[in-house]
Length: 486
Image (cartoon, rainbow, N blue to C red; front, side, top):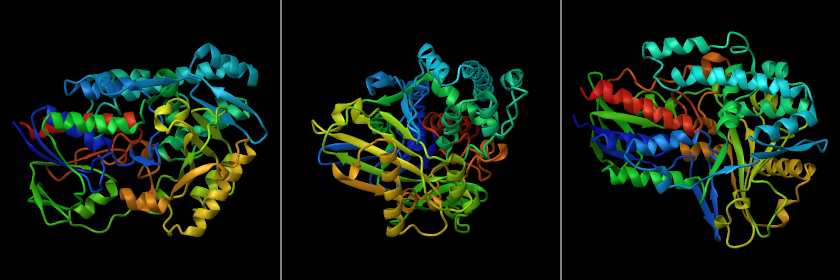
């Protein structure tokens, strides 16, 4: 049975859902509010420099391959993935620095140089991470949360780690590693889902495990090539993709969706509606109250700067992390005080170090990001100036040159701009934070109570991160086939 499917939002989750459902023979219309598809995974170009504005590293490349395969396509015909080795360089205020490698012999040498006993701690981490991933891949990452357990779910429970699974993330990291540098490095991973390591459950240790198990990858030409490739496959399969088409409301009668209504007055009849956007806006689209995601429940936002550098920076790695002097205070200022940290940890992504095609022959493209609160109060120009000064100061104290002297162009993305561009309350990049196991694993369901209504993307089940969003599209598409196609 062919369904009329309307997808609201052209981010990664919406595009992957369009690929899967159009390949299955359904009539898909995707409506994107902005001028370009991709959502946070987008692109900015200036003076011959090309920047990704969102995700900068991917892992689990087989999930990307499987998404293309679902449409009868081959990923390698559309994308060239390159594995990074080392993944990143980490720098501390006292001058300590090392390369983070997913090459096990090399990485064990690094560990032994820092703290000989931590090589054993890392092997224990790998064992814990493997068990967490085995459990997650057969349960959380495979099925909707509201589905009853099947035999695979029950069988996977034997891998459940009885110790160190539901404890505090930071405390478990401390039990595994003695080196303060390794503790801070591993504590960075909950920020991948916009959360604090001091408030998140230890189950998030699956994130660094995946990076070690599957490596860190980038896409030749920039990660926005993923968006272009998925959009192309979706169109080849018959999907209609509409840009500059914001949806004002979802039409529904007697508990079932009927249509989506565009801001320009147009409408699209639909048997199924898939919302790919922040889940907190769904009630408003259904005719309810304004979206509510209070500041105390929001994940972090970010202060992002794109800098086009005139000259080459050969000593810079593809990924560099410059840590603050007091990590715990940094997160307290973000989540307790709602303030940009006085001494922020700064992440620098320089894809031009690995791909000279993103610069006009010479120079670098720098993506510079520090964590920021998803504030209830507005972010003004004075805050932008202060945040930029603090970012530049941290980079200078970490041994990097003053970027302002060599920059040909600088573009700042504040929490306010992020929130306005992508309809995220306060600029909360991942919707709700993952503090506590309920927040980490019980997210808005893919299948909603209103019949024919579904969610996909980072703010819904199973959560944020590029491979996880693609798995969200797989789960949502499977639920639609099961419940709507009969």
